[in-house]
Length: 316
Ligand SMILES: Nc1ncnc2c1ncn2[C@@H]1O[C@H](COP(=O)(O)OP(=O)(O)OP(=O)(O)O)[C@@H](O)[C@H]1O
Ligand SMILES: [Mg+2]
Image (cartoon, rainbow, N blue to C red; front, side, top):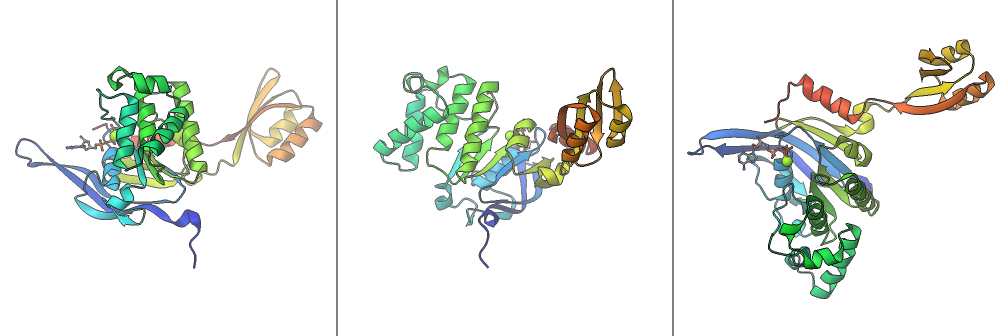
């Protein structure tokens, strides 16, 4: 049977464990990942959430082959973790970008392109395109040293670096951190465009509203253990219930359609019991004006906070 495009696993992890050895004699083991298994399919945008110290960055580094697992196995683009050929097809924006202070952004991107052995004329064309895409002025990239960059500029040049090789799969560790609201919006647009181009995106984030808007599936990691993996519909419910607000109409008739019907002066709210289209039609005959109809389900933030509170999570 031919596999559907979206069923091709791009990232696979099976029972990944990681224990760091700390202390002067390296005799104090710290278990950071305790048996993580997950799979990310081609074209998916996958979000990894978890409190500080949950092990997100560690997992990302293991999947990228930058750190090694203590046990377990995995694949990236069908190759074993750490495989050099697979790395050529991957982009990575690290959490704390260890950028080179003494280079300009342009020089840094040239260096990144050289690592992928991209010929200079092609690299230059690509750098110009990427700077435009991440909205970092070419003049700033060419003239300013990276030690003079703001956090937002560093994040932008970091994103350009992650995309220099036109990767098939992109790992982003806290991509929105340090960005102002406009920058976050621009980055969301970039991620949506990458998704439209069929790229697989794996990102860690603390900004749950971004994750909610961007991700096809989400995993929640806590103290090195995966608590859940699924689509937002699977985790939060399909959102089949609607919250309605409006004005006017007959209170008795409205109350028969709405749970928790609440009338304040001429304005009312309630949760719809039936079909939204049928209600909208009925509202007209009732002489009511519908001012808002919003799908109701817990936000990812509510879900996340509840889940981690239930587990008594403390940042590590
Ligand atoms: N090189 C290391 N040596 C020892 N312990 C480490 C090392 N790297 C990470 N840890 C520990 O592993 C745990 C998980 O760290 P990690 O950076 O993966 O968490 P995280 O989920 O990315 O956190 P954050 O949200 O703050 O970025 C932490 O307790 C951290 O102190
Ligand atoms: Mg981290």
